Length: 590
Image 1 (tube, rainbow, N blue to C red):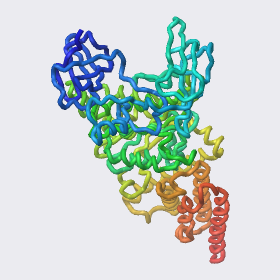
Image 2 (image 1 turned 60 degrees about the vertical axis):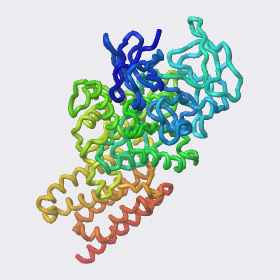
Image 3 (image 1 turned 180 degrees about the vertical axis):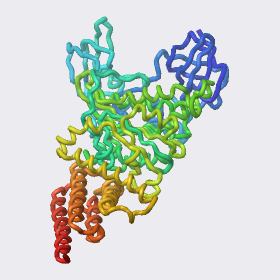
Image 4 (image 1 turned 90 degrees about the vertical axis):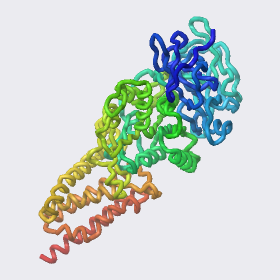
């Protein structure tokens, strides 16, 4: 029976007048060039397909070939230290085949099938395996041990194995016989549909922060391992650079960076920086535990829509091995725009600002695949998502930002006024929030210091008081404020400049451990309390400021190395001596 043929082409949307040959969400090959597509709609007269490659030159009458399988990715060794497009085609391989410009219909293996891996077989004949259990392992990179696992829906007895040695991706490693007597040959890789979440045994409550080394995040607005955060901000506010910093320094085992609809030079910068940056764990390139998914703004729009599902499927695969994964999605606004464009070509009824009515459900499908889990084999792993949102004109009331807030518990709102003032990260401490504070409080109190949460609360309160006082200052000036309120404004300046502002290009300030963050808060609050005491005894705020202690505290982030926390005690003694000197001078004057 001949394959159905195309009767309509509308950008990435292709229609076929045959519904019996296909099933919903099935992957298909479109046209003589065998472009990759997916069935997204069916009725009694036609089938609608979205094509993940350019449709230029595609003509009516060309055949559409069903595959009988959903849109899937290949999972196995070779994913890390690689860069893929939105449907997991390796860009380096595509370049070697078609040159600098990717052609349509190029059929290349998703992972390197010729590379040999040094495989250690972990099971013997007669072993009974359940879904998710590892039957072999290989060193994928120097940083990551790759576990080859039984597919989640499969179980059975091992009836055949190979010896330890070097094997290619598609070589049989074991043969499994299920309860029905059917044999399954398991290799180093497996396939999995990108739109279906990989199963786990149970979801774990958030109890440990993902430590980023960025003070404003770790202290004021922390995110838990397995959490979801949004970074909304207008053009130039530093969304991409903030994600770069988190990707470089967070304590996740593996980084999945999804460039969704961004400019090509930004992805080039990511690739160059991550290749050049030394991993603090291994001393080698950070790319050895990173995978990049690049679907730039000039690539097919349908593949942009699929790219975030591809990225989170790769993350879930490594989560099942017991690793902690951090996903940087930059940006979900471009992904939503792809949804809007495809929806328009499907002639669907638009909702707010032209976005499809199902935008909230699609966002929830993505963010709900995050979490910390106990895997099917008893390991613990997590997937943390940090999604950038690019609202036009920094309007946080637009649909993508508002719907994203419904599904994340951490909101890092970027402020263009802070960015233009060169305050980075430009995270606004009044509009941002984290709902993980109570969940993570026991960790901070036990692992850092029992007073960490108390100091964090005091710092946050001072910043809020400053916001209220500055509203008064803008109306009637600062001269009418009493001295104690002027001190709040001065200490808040120390917090903003000396604690919240961070220099990504300074060796000591680009990453700050939690212990130093705690000691910095302790020092700031100590100076605040000592200044209050002096002012109650009659010392003027101007005299305290003239002593230079505020500027001394601001410079702490540069002057005290991360590995020398004992120097905080010496500095505290120096500050106390300076303040005691002011008190002595006051008594002598009296």
